[in-house]
Image 1 (tube, rainbow, N blue to C red):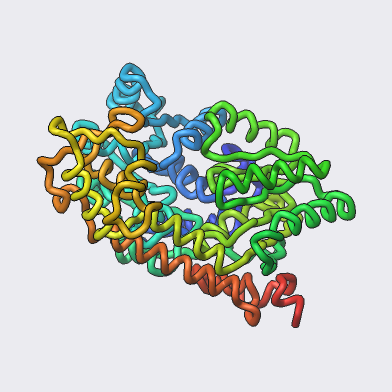
Image 2 (cartoon, rainbow, N blue to C red):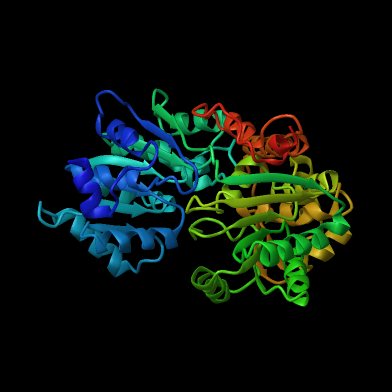
Amino acid sequence: MKHKILQQYFGFNDFKLGQEEIIEAVLDREKHNGVLAVLPTGGGKSLLYQFPSLLNNGLTIVISPLISLMKNQVDFLKSKNILAELYNSSLSDIDKRNIIYKLSNSNNGDQIKILYISPERFSDKSFVSFLKDLEISLFAVDEAHCISTQGHDFRPSYRMLKEVTQILNPKQILALTATATKRVQNDICEQLNITSATRFVKGFFRGDLQLCVKRCSEDSKIGHIVKQIEFLQQKQNIKTGIIYAPTKSLAEDICFILNTNGIQSNFYHAGLSADNRKNIQEKWFNNGGIIVATIAFGMGIDKQDVRFVIHASLPSSIENYYQEVGRASRDGKGGLCIMYTDIEKDINLQKFFIDISYPQQKDIVSFWKWCIQECSEDHLILLTQKEMANECTTVSKKHVIGGCISKLQEGKLIETLGRGKYLIHTELDIFKQIDFELLQKKRIAKFNMLNDMRDFANNCESCRMQTILEYFNDYSKTESCGKCDVCSKK
C-alpha cells in the first residue's frame, strides 16, 4: 500500500534512509506523541508530511519560512493531483479569502490536504481562531531549528508556534530540520510542547563527500582557490561547484580573479537585485559552472551534480558548514569539500559579525542614551550611521553602531525616515522594548557555535565526518569516512 502511494503520487520506487520509519511514527499517534526528524539536506524531509497527508482525514498544516519553497512545493503537489495551497504575505486579500472559503466548504472530493503557512501569519488572531475549528491531523514545522535561540538561524516569529499548537491542538506534531545539535533538539521539543517526542537523527554520514581543511594566510587564499579550480577543471574535467565567501566584497574579488584567469564564474550575494539573483541562479541550475557566493546562496539549492564546495573562510558554525558542503553530490556520485582558513583572522571576522548582529546590552543602552541626548527638539537625528559612529564616543567599537541601530529599530525605539534621518521615540522605555536576556542568550549561543567550528578546523586526530556525526548526535555510523584529510594521513 505505502509503496503504491509512493510510486503513484511521488514517482519513487523506494523510500530514502529513515523515511518509512518516520512516516509510520507520524501516523501512529497513540504510540508517538510528537516526532522530531533531523535529516540532512537532501534527506527527503518534505515526504515525511506530504505522504501522511494522503492517509489522514484532516488538514496537514506545514510551517515554512520561505515563500519561494512553499510555491515550488504547492506547484509540485498540484501537478500530482494532491490538493495543496499556501497562505502567506505573497497573497492578495482576495486570494486569502478564497483559501479560507475552500477550507470552510471543502468536502471529501475537494478537501485541501496540505496548507503551507508562513509563521508570521499566526500574528493574525482571527486566522488562528478560524483554524481552531478545523480538524488538523498534522502540524509540521519545517526548518524547526528556527524556533531555538540555541540554533544558527533563530527567527522570533517561530516563537509564536508554542501558543499556536496549544490553541489548535493538532492530533500530531512533526518537527523537521536539517541541522540541530542535541541542545537545539531539546529546545525545539520544549518550544513545540512535544518534550516526549520520538526523535530520529539519521543520514548525516556522507561517504560520498571528501572533507578537507587547509590552513593558509589570508593573503594567499584566492591564489590557492584559483589553483584548485584550475586543477579540477583541467585534470579532472570538473566544471560545476560553489565557492562560499564570508563577505560580498571577497565574493566579487574571487569571481573577478577567476574570470581574469580564464575560469568563468558568477558571483551571488544579497547586494544584488532579486531579479539578478534569480537569473544567476537559474542560469547556474540549467548550465552548471561556478558560483562564488555568500551564505545568501542557501535554502532551496538542490542541484544534483555539484562536484565541489570550497569555503574561502571559516564558517560561523558546524551547522552552516554541514549544510553548505551538503549541497555537493546530491546524486551521491562524489564531491570535494575544501575549507581554506587563516583560523585566527577568520575567527575575528566572525566575532565582528556577531558584534554587529548581537550587540552587547551596555553598547545598545549607551548608544540609546547618546541618541536621546543628541536628538533635536522634534526628536530627530540628521546623521548617517557612519557619522553617528564617528560622533558617539561612548560605544566600545564603532562597527557595533549599525547593530545597535538595528536592535533599537526592532524595539520600535528608532524609526528610519530616510537616509541620514532618524526619529527617536524618547518616550519609550528601552528595557521594556528590548528583551536583553534573549539577546544575550543568542549572542552566547553564536560564540559557542563559533568555538565548536574552530575546534573542528583545528582537529587533526579524528575523522572529520565522525566529528560531525557526534556533533549532531547521530550514532548510526561508527566507521571513519576513510577519505577526509585526517583519515588520509593515517
